[in-house]
Image 1 (cartoon, rainbow, N blue to C red):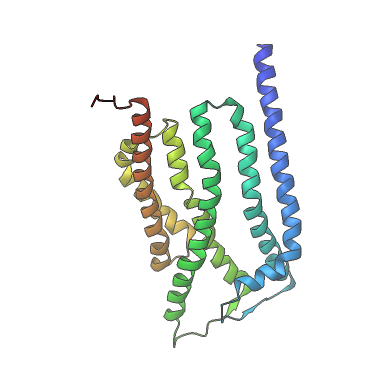
Image 2 (cartoon, rainbow, N blue to C red):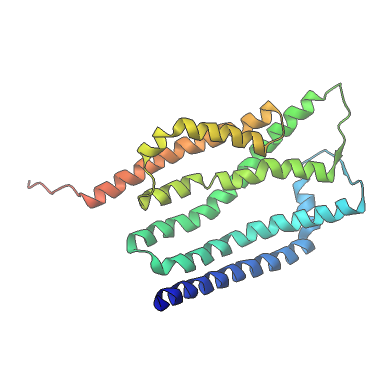
Length: 245
């Protein structure tokens, strides 16, 4: 009993250490982000003809904190992945470690790809569609808080949603999920995706479609990758015998 308690206490201490390092890295990057907030703000608006305004001093602070937070989240992602690996790595088998070696770099690449896709493809389309709806009817007037709130509401979810293929392959290699299971529950997943797209986007049908369609494609790609992972795992476990010539 005492040895079991010592075992869990040791792991809790290790977990606290990993969380502390991640939190400290986030705080450092957040501080750096405040110094770079001006440059980041100008970068977001470099190709935009939209003029933004602020309605009060608190909104200026909101802009600085948001810019700093974006930089901190993006920068701390590799640190968090490394700390997660350091925590779970000693308990993994050789095969599981091989899966993690692919998984950890992939989550950073996919997160960046999701952010870029949301910012370069989805956001301009959603914003352009909404601006076209106001043509001749309204004068578009954007506050900085509303503009960037809309931007992040569209873009940030894609950073996490693009992690789906890596997560699926990782869980498939560990035998937790299978392609058959994913196909079986496909209709329920699509229902969840519809609800999710309605929650994370503004209440208009076009924005929901801009989010729903890529998520559906990601899910179908995940099924394909899971099937490929199962096939590769099966071929390693049952190599074809060599036939004499």
